[in-house]
Image (cartoon, rainbow, N blue to C red):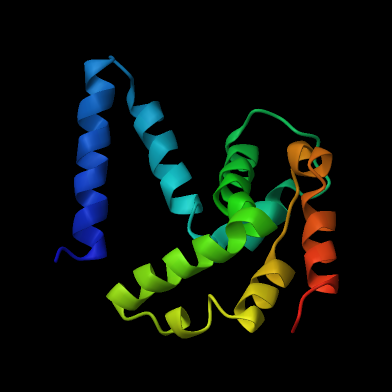
Amino acid sequence: MANDDEVFKNFLIEIAERLAEFEQGLSDLEQAYNVIIRSDFTLTPQNHRLVQGADFEWNQAWFNVLLNEADILPSSTPALGLSLSQALSREWMLFGFEGYKTVATVQGREAFLRSLVFSSPSSRVLQASQRCQLQLEHSPG
């Protein structure tokens, strides 16, 4: 099995080849690279801090936040949350990541919901934070 660095390198090569087909410049590749790097869930809090108090703009900082929110929004819903948590647990188990033992439990779900941050105007329209809070209030744990 390829390690993460190999997978990432191959992915970037693939993107570079595709961008070249459409005569896209280096800045597009750099932007794609930054989006991929900033989508790491460990960077999510920093991404949200970078836009805190700022008006929405079409820029890299807000794009990172939108991507982070799009990544977790389905998992934050009662309709999809449990099945996505179970799928994530199976995926993590394949890689030996210890979180697989708890991510699909009631406690894991509650921790996930408490950890979520929503900053975008669209998440406010969707009332994402309030919906997460409501789930926590009605959680069996």
